[in-house]
Length: 296
Image 1 (cartoon, one colour):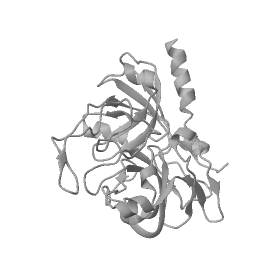
Image 2 (image 1 turned 180 degrees about the horizontal axis):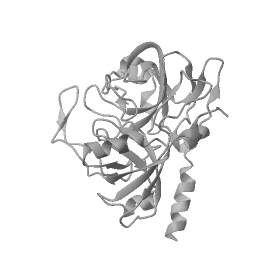
Image 3 (image 1 turned 60 degrees about the vertical axis):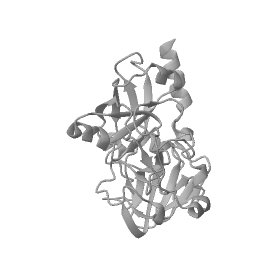
Image 4 (image 1 turned 30 degrees about the vertical axis):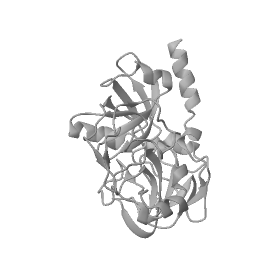
């Protein structure tokens, strides 16, 4: 097992409310047509972690449940400290007591995304309160100080089939993304919150890098992408992130990626694995069974 400092991390409660869906009157694509489409926020019943990230009649759709606090200062703690893999619990409304799990963090709109099973989704309502046991901020790999970990629950980290190499770590990934495809979010000053987007408007690159098969929850390797103190190009840098929202029609946007690992050196490698998805690592069937037992 890869050594970490998990025993020194603080587990802190953060909380948010289910945010209402938001959209403008039209979304305009790179060919100039405009349409009204579902977007961010709300409770998404038929798009979940494991669903396709491509092909929906939508723009920036967030899987499962989107939570936020109205005041930015309050929401900053939720957005910063929640980590992918953290346990979430409903604490108000008809689904009170049901459990879910954090699957991503969306920048710009500043939502934390939470997966719940189908029966729980049917009982949730806008403004229901959800608390998260945030755990993972400050996680470090003891023997690999140049590999920086972001937004990752230590329990989920230990479930990932990561291997140590002579230089760093090898992580299973669905595909590898070149730096020129990373768009909206470039230049953001923080990577311990939010995401940035894989651009999908170029048809040749779309096919070459197997973007048509991307799923929400997929792990992807970002080449020459530095995500340590901001998001930008750096030759030799490597990052691994998780796909957290759907494709977009807006130019410069696409499936969003929340950072999990980054290094300014080429010491993070990716091993191609079609099953490199949160569904394989989060044991969602066990979570659903636990919620079923609560219902019964």
